[in-house]
Length: 162
Length: 162
Image (cartoon, rainbow over the protein chains, first blue to last red):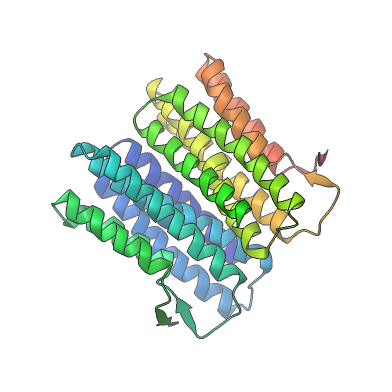
């Protein structure tokens, strides 16, 4: 029950981040996405400590992750590009980041359990993207960085689980 | 391969619908969500006809469905409420609709296969919501209808598969 409540809170933070994107309050969007990432990490720890992992919980967690670390940071990137009159490149990067995030999550859910992550986890990619949107002043550089992060999610790079 | 391409196209239409919400082009958002629903239906038919269902495809399809029929129509509802100065009720309905959509999808993915749907499918709820946002002039009525649709998704109502 407890891990699913954390997942619900993660999803609600992701949805709230999307509303702040619609309202063009970018610093708040980034803060909400980072808070969701912290909660997602806590969620995983609680599930393991309480031995409370379930098939339902795993599905629910992936769905929440796609909203909070796929759609929300990519929508933030898109709105930031829109402000700088780069709507088409912004749209393409929004599409690519969300698509790669969904492919990463679907692959993770059907892969056998290992001691490493294959490709960088969407939680890390999404949180980095949300921070970079605030820190990188050049939008074109930002869009290129989002493409690299998207491709890293679906790459075969092995990252140890910690 | 073919069903996964349909799912990718469904996801890309959902993401595009979110960008049109950010640009306050509501009729285009509704059109894109309906197109995604048509594609989602085609996707299911193709997967069954080609006997090409896979565990990966099922996961990927659910993730795409949450974006196209959960987040996109609920974001559309939120923006419509925002225009009518109902941002807080709009935010709460956005949260509820997306949460119920994710719970519906997670429950569906772990439930044994049956001849009926338990609760109305998110594809139908999302498409109806997207259409209603355009058709219902009273925003408060619209918000109440979105709550009913959200609760119907997680209800125990049985709907025959067709």
